[in-house]
Image 1 (tube, each protein chain N blue to C red):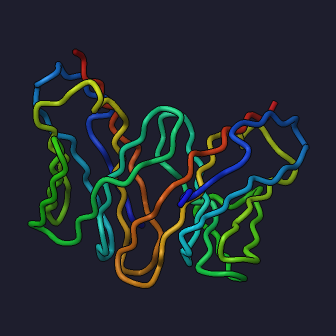
Image 2 (image 1 turned 120 degrees about the horizontal axis):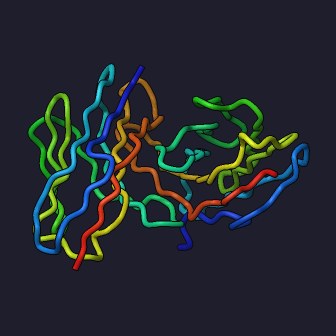
Amino acid sequence: EDQVTQSPEALRLQEGESSSLNCSYTVSGLRGLFWYRQDPGKGPEFLFTLYSAGEEKEKERLKATLTKKESFLHITAPKPEDSATYLCAVQATSGSRLTFGEGTQLTVNP
Amino acid sequence: NAGVTQTPKFRILKIGQSMTLQCTQDMNHNYMYWYRQDPGMGLKLIYYSVGAGITDKGEVPNGYNVSRSTTEDFPLRLELAAPSQTSVYFCASSYGAGGSETQYFGPGTRLLVL
């Protein structure tokens, strides 16, 4: 059974204070690892897909990295508008389903 | 492109009532999905469809039914609503041509069963 564990559950940062969110996973064969951002009362918004260990992707202040067991979402010099819940999900080679973690709720204070 | 749209945005049901949550996508995606999200939890897959006329169960299908008569629409039916079905429901779609396919989500339907 595919499993995704995200840590920490919640993270409070001061504006400009860089940090990382962790996503640990077990999957029979990884087709892709996805990061989504979710604002309160809205649906998840796609950020990145990573396909193989060593891959990295960047978007503005966010950088996602992937190893064989985990992924990190690095947030550099965050701003209050980066406050959201960040969800990680894996897709196995055996199908199209996504298995989601429970998310990390990020709050960035001005 | 509107993307994935869902109606209604919010609904209150009494125990035992039934309702249909509507989902439409205009991206010509083959695959569509229904998830539920409970407070502080990740998304759980209820049902999914790989094309018109084809549906399959996800992790938590009990108490729900789906149909897929067109590429665009994927309604979720709740029969005999129970308090345990209080949740936020998200519909998603993806192209599904093979390989890793990004799923795009709708805005959600918040359901309260009393």
